[in-house]
Length: 288
Image (tube, rainbow, N blue to C red):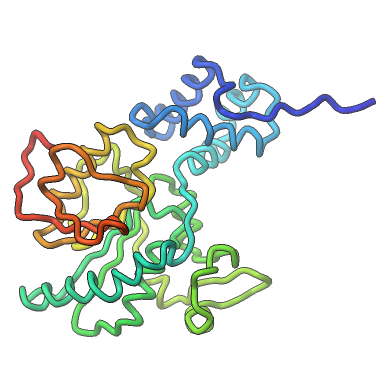
């Protein structure tokens, strides 16, 4: 006797009713509204979770979601997380280290400010904000308090990020001397040292639904907006523009583009790396 073949979920094999039932549970129980996301992306991520759970049919999985809070959180994390690694796209970090961060520090000092805030929006498991913390520590910025805020929609993902422990795969762009200085190795996993972990504040925040964006001098939001509709992308860019000061910097993912009227609020500074500067153009209420 052979076992029946396990269905290999792809996402497009979910019926519209099944898809709607799953998204309704996430909206009602986790206040996570998927209406503004691209369906195809979300279907693929739901399918990934269905494959991991070896789900035979969606009806049984829906019953599990209704009974199992942890599974609901895991599904949310699967949908919302984006794969990352330390110093992903090294050229972007070289620009940050050599151009953007020194300039932001200089402007803060010139303005008589004592603090600078860097925001990693959609931080996933923390590789991006910790990479920023490593850059800041290496820059030896002693006369400014540099706050590093890291936000994501999923609390379980944020809990994992706070632990600061990563597989070696996530660290392949980290130079050996940096690895030795800032990480503890244990059985093939690497934990960021405590002083660096304490530099990053992790906070739950949904850039789709929140209207209270934190003020920041630099925003990194890379490979997050590709999942959103064009209309939502423009709304998020408007909210970033409202929170950034003039000359503040925004970094998007390499495959992400800026379209629509909101482009008037940004000037492209390093086009390949999608690094933009906030212009003096005001943001209107209608934009937001």
